[in-house]
Image (cartoon, rainbow, N blue to C red; front, side, top):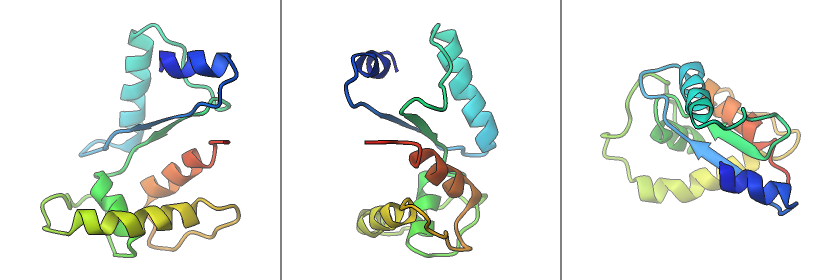
Length: 127
């Protein structure tokens, strides 16, 4: 965080993406934990105009990968041990994430709440 803010202060194009799974917690709780860790380190809170975003997949990032591959998911099930070809699913998921973050994109109904929030966060980045 400190290095990112130092670069931003020097007007260097810099962004930071923080990712932490929500696991069995709420997204709000995980965001609070990140804020608490920042405060404990003596750093200032993240401002909305900073190029720092926090992504909190609920339940885990595998949920987002499946959702971005247009599979029906929920945010309670742990999909990690399902035997899916994660390496094969990541490229189409990243392409879908790119498409879903384009201006004026209407997200599909199967998009999870945490992914919707993550997309809003990503859309704050300006490069």
